[in-house]
Length: 349
Image 1 (cartoon, rainbow, N blue to C red):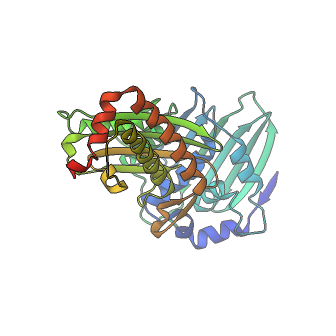
Image 2 (image 1 turned 30 degrees about the vertical axis):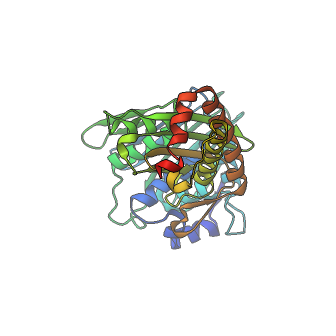
Image 3 (image 1 turned 90 degrees about the vertical axis):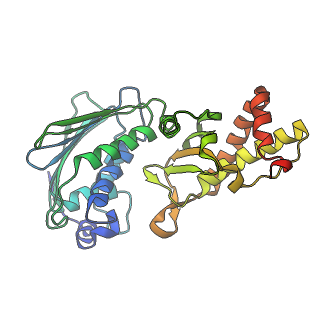
C-alpha cells in the first residue's frame, strides 16, 4: 500500500479552470471525457460504458471491454516531478477535483485500485479476477471547487450521445437514481452518418443527393466522413467536425482536407465531362451537410478556445482518401456526377 500526494494535484486544485475549462458543466464534462477518451482507444462490439447519478450525489462510471493501458499509465505517472507531465492528467484531474474518488482497473492479470480524498490517494494492487478490460470509477465533484454545482442529467445524456456517435458501436447507458428515475441508452454502429440522417430529417421533403458515408483507419488515426447535398437548404451550409471528443468550431486540418479532397474529385469529373467549372470551398458547401470526425493521439488544437485542429498529416491523408473515394463514386454514378459538375458550371454562376 502506498499513500501519496503530488505537486500536480496541488496545482490542479489551485488552478482548476486551467485544466478543465470552467467550474460548471463544461468542467465536469471534461472530467468525464478525458477518462472516456483513454478507455476508448480500443473498441469491441461488447464495449459498454454506464454512467450513474447516485442518490449520494456521487457519479459512478463502469465499463467493460475497454482499453486499460492508458489509465494504468496515468496512474503510474501521477508521481512524476515535472508538473507539466500530461500523461497522468485524465486520472490526476479526477483525483484532484473530487471530494472523494475510487478507481478500480482490471488490467491484464492485475487489479489496481486507487482511493483518493481531495488530491491525496492510496494505491493498491492485487491479483486479477480474470476480467481484463473492466473499469469502475466513483467520484463526487468537490463542492469547494465546483461551487453550487449539481451535475445535470440531460446535459450529461446529450454529451454521452455525442460520444456514441463519435465512437461507433460503443454502448453507453446513462441513468439517474437521484429523484425521478431516468435512463437513456445510446449505441450508433453507423457513427456520424446517423448525425447526417438527423440533419437531413430536419427537411423531410428534401431529396438529398451526392451522399457518401466514409470510414477509414489511416496510419495512427481513425476517420469518419459523411456528407450530401440538401437542395432545400438553398445556400445554407451545415458543417461540423470533431477531433476525439472536441467539436472543432473553427474547423482546421480535418475539414479543410475533406473539402480539398471533394474539390479535387469534382475537378477530375469536370475534365471527364469536358465541363468548365469554377469551384471554391465556399461554393462547395452551399446546400451541403458535411460532418467529419478523427480520433487518435497527439492532435494539436490552436486558436481561441483551442477550437481549431492543426495537423498537416491529418489534412494530407484525409484529402487523398476522400479524393479517391469521391472520384470512384462519381465515376460509377454518371447521373450524380453530371448533377454535381453542373452545379459549378460557368453558366450557373
